[in-house]
Image (cartoon, rainbow, N blue to C red; front, side):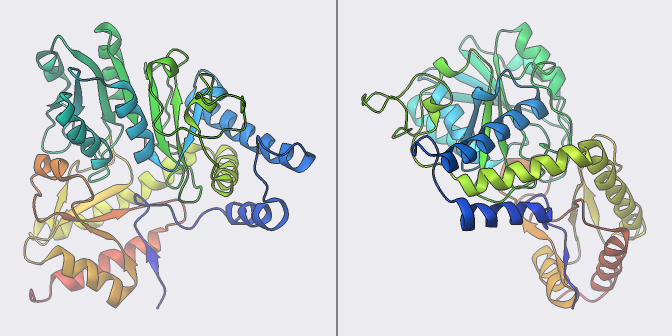
Length: 389
């Protein structure tokens, strides 16, 4: 049975061939650390790391490559931001569509007297931006917001929120897990102070690498989450105060960075506009194919009903069937891989009206085809027209 992968919102698969090739080459023929060894091979690896920082800075219009901080993933990046910046007595705003990568750190910090308020969203996931003003408090310090929902794909108005933050002298932190490499992100135009990303989704790198881009004035305002050896100022036991060493203690995930470098190069050559257009086309094709099933009450499409203002993520309810069973049968009977449940975003599901059952999520990527979408639609029709188990 041929396999069809529709879980790209979790991690993109497959990766461009050069990602695996570069990681293999590093492990097999290089393999050394940077900022430690004083020899040519280490300097060559360090040059790749430097180039990767610059590629990210160029992609997101950051201030400088030195302000790109590498982490394990977007979750660690967000933890670094929230735990490094917020102090007892502070208050922040978040959207009602946030992932647990934001909400669990904030819930943990609430025991330290750090509060948050949720900006409400419409039932399709759209941000009700006109509610932000009323939620401000005297101690509000920042807005933390996802760029797009991982549940339903709805894109939030980041540029508009950035202008709001600038007008009210608030810091603006953006979770770009679902949009980095798919939608344009301009830290300057969007007034973003800190951008958290993961490398294994739209940036097409391997798992285990992510990062953070900071505006020039942000590093002194953040306490490091992890400290340790950096290979710099080793005669001192204090953490360096310069970038990026201030936040990169310990041995770096160099295979991950090198794989990310290859993914970023592929993305630059292909163009994020081409990636978005392909994913958007498949999303529209899938939504159109779902309409007859929706009319019959077999499925309910969550979020927006067309491709405007959304990424290539489509979540479905199956009113007459257990979604977990349908997802299981899609895989076991047809080889179609989806994700089912609450997608680590319980409040988003409450906003969308899909809590606690959750949804089946289809998320499209560069290597998916209309033929695969046709197979998924046919499989859904067959399963949903059968008696509920």
